[in-house]
Length: 135
Image (cartoon, rainbow, N blue to C red; front, side):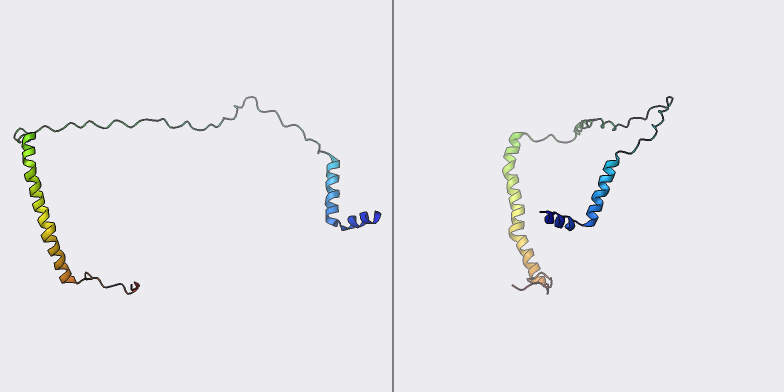
């Protein structure tokens, strides 16, 4: 039994023994003696100011939008058409729009595309990218 204790004690490194002994000596010595008390504060001096966070910003709502007054009609301008006249005129207005844009998109636009194709070729005048992969 004694031999095991001796072997265990010799395995413990010396620097740990020294550290343990030093810690025990420091703890046994007790606290260091206190020095003289600090001088009393100056009675005439103002206390240190207390720092506080600034107050939050005051919420002010946006002003209301300005009132827009419609402009007066010029007396020489003709009055708007009555509802009955607008209803009668609407089919003719739609017919005019269909003829105008129908003729453009059915006749003029295809002819323009054909003209560009003949001028620039199918590729549109742009050389193919040599780095692009061929599919």
